[in-house]
Length: 229
Ligand SMILES: N[C@@H](CCC(=O)N[C@@H](CS)C(=O)NCC(=O)O)C(=O)O
Image (cartoon, rainbow, N blue to C red):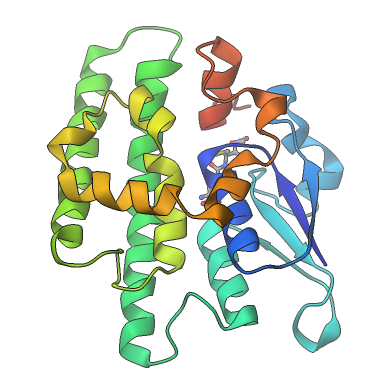
């Protein structure tokens, strides 16, 4: 059994999608980042960086519980645990890791800033909007090129796709002011990923609580975990 500390944001969705895809049993522990619950002692003892997703696998290596944070590490751990969605041959395995790290280190932070300045910043900052929108478009172009001759990011569907999709799902794209028609390969890929039943289940976890996709301020804020201390 895996304890998932979660809120329905793009980073949270990476974990729910992986857990659903891999058929693992998990218990959701909501961490309401709009109410600053990520700063509570009980959560900080699991993740001193106060961010979701965080997991505790009660049956970790050696049968002992293990706590993990950082979505990339979580996806890699779950893939290794189940032997799924991460190729066993070294070349294929590294390819998936490259694109997984590309998402967590490049795409996630830049798209997050883009969404922040378009959807949440308390003041209009045209320079930041232009800077992060330009970078978001550049990253879309990189992914579009990658997907030109393969159905998924590394050929077969993998944890690289699970990490990448939640940040490019339709409602998130809207917030980033991205016109998906300019990136036909990303569009086709996103539709294929969105069609997967496990992805639909993962994206739905706690959706009703947060009403993601509603144009109200609270929902926008939840997308980016923007309430910092
Ligand atoms: N690098 C982290 C980022 C996680 C992250 O930014 N989570 C946001 C929600 S999408 C969060 O928990 N924010 C709360 C906070 O920053 O206090 C990962 O990939 O897991």
